[in-house]
Length: 457
Length: 74
Image 1: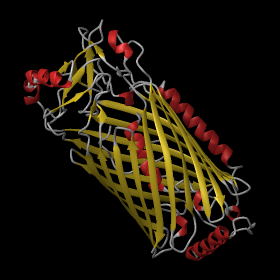
Image 2: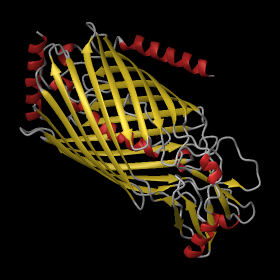
Image 3: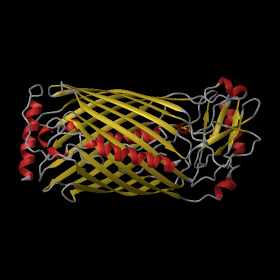
Image 4: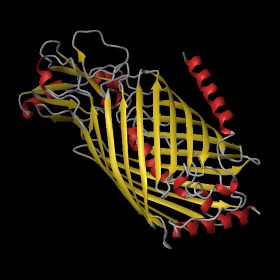
């Protein structure tokens, strides 16, 4: 019976895709769930038992003068009788380029030790110190099994493993969806747990310890000054631990409600607790002279060893009379590090027969964590927790993009997206001496290109 | 403060559930909602890529749902 309903539903959907502008008669007693709220494969109701659905994508992310990432994704979902689905996903993430170390620029050349303690790099006057050895490849594998657990209850259970050269994460999650009120309302409960281990090249640096550092009026002088300094942190390096770990537990409670024939609304409350090593072993904080603002050296950062994040997420989707779809969402997030953030995301899917065009705009704003400091003042006692990572400071970010695709066709569906992303961190207001003339937290710009291809076997 | 927030949230959810009974559609009115592009779980591959970018570049993450896989880009 269920199979028959699904086939009827599939035929109807195909008809509606072909004749978008033509009014359709009422569908039979469709039993389509509102949506897999989480970790659910796309177009769940569209594939039939015995079929494979394959979703693939490749993302190219490129920042001006900084990081470039190439990220292919491949997901395969197998559909079985009685709404049971197995899904497996592979993500590869290849990163190269430079990332901000956290140190401030200076009026002179500066030579920094690499985080591993092996080798050094020199930056010019006024340049934000970027560590150019940032390269890594991440491979992530995840799998999900979904099935009904009762008349109105369904569950999905997932496992995931993510491995980088210096990082391993293993996690599991389960999601329960309970439909009621003629399947117009769905309550969702999600639980997740992950255990991560980090083993950086050169081991875990000692928090707040000084790194080898030198400056000079030209690159050569800076490097020769550094050579005289090199190894000043040998004692610290001998004491390092090889690895450290953290655990992350997530809880999500969600409510999805069908409003009318053309709209639905989702409300999620999420809680995430991280416990363990949350410091970035590659980031440092400059210590500058109180009067002239000249960097005297830099120390390894240190973050608190636990973080409790909470967020409220609300999303609405509405199909307009011309069948264009408006997708709006807002997230408010706050944590016990003092961070508050607002995220607004708007998508408008403009249907053009078998084609669609979807403009996208996203705005993000965060306030700094309590321990964020762009630099420290020499001679003052060191705080217990401090980070100069601009990603923990006051910041706004803006994304604008457009996606174009073909939503029908015997050879599957494809779409391509082009997006522009710009982060504008706030410049610290209390820069002493010569630092006042330098830009400590410049804007970061990135361009993203994504290509998706979905098909069935 | 946290308890107050949680109580308010519980009340809001209960209130929403009470109000939900009058919202919604009959099973034969699901033609529009059944379209792929009206599904909240539509295009999870893209959602995963987006979440990963913003997780790496901003201090906030999650909220929309559960993504799979940890990442060392904190």
